[in-house]
Structure formats: structure tokens, C-alpha cells
Image (cartoon, rainbow, N blue to C red; front, side, top):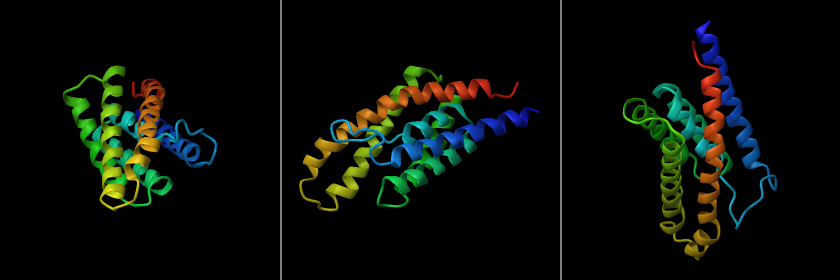
Length: 169
């Protein structure tokens, strides 16, 4: 009976990732605010990692990374690899050393989102030698980072609700 709740919770997380992928990749469904659309899958897998054990968090990080690579990135493997490692490490950190709270989750989501998007931009725009890359960063990537962090707040509350209500007794 305890396994049933765990399976329902994982199915709910999987459906959430699939729905967020559809929302994120559908053109003109989510408006571009100041030139950037949010990466909805990024805060979703991070908030799952805050709440779950390390192995499920790692697999949800991999699934979210693959979906991000398919829908957003031209470079297959960047988000897949990094989100797998980050979600595994975050799960261990929050299980052993940190308290899962709204403030901690928002702060970690803000830092990780900023670092991942800036490193992506650095590797695939600056080092690739694209012209006007800093203009593109200011016009699109700063708003994308902020919009992603803001979308992470309700996703944390949603995943916390799923985790609390579908937890083993």
C-alpha cells in the first residue's frame, strides 16, 4: 500500500513534466516578456530534487534535462547531463544538510538557473563566436532567467503539495 502512493507521486511528477514541456514548447502560448520565455522544466526538476530521494531526483533531472534539450537547446546533452548531476547533488544536500523551505528553494532555484543559463550562453554564444551576443543576452537571456525564477515559486508550491499529499504513511 505504501508503494502505491509513491507510484502515484512519480506519475504526477511525470505528468507535470510532460505538461510543462508542452506549455514551454508550444509557440505563442506563453508570452515572451521582454524577449524571453521561461524554462519551466528547470525549476520543476529542481523542486522535485529538493523533496525526493537522490535516485528518483536524478532520474527526474535526467528526464527534465532531455526534454529541455529537445525543446529548447540545439545541443543535445547539455541540460541532460547537468540536471542529472545537479538534481542528484541537491537531493543529497537537502536530505542531509538543509531544510526544505520556500526561501531555500527559491534561493537555490535562482542561483542554479542563473548559473546554468549563463554557462549555456557562454559556451554556445560567446565561445562559438556569434555576433552581437551580448546584445542578445541583454535582450533575451536576462528576462528568461528572471521569468524562470518567478515561475519556480508556484512550481515549488505545487510539488510540495504533491509530495505531502501522496507520501507514504
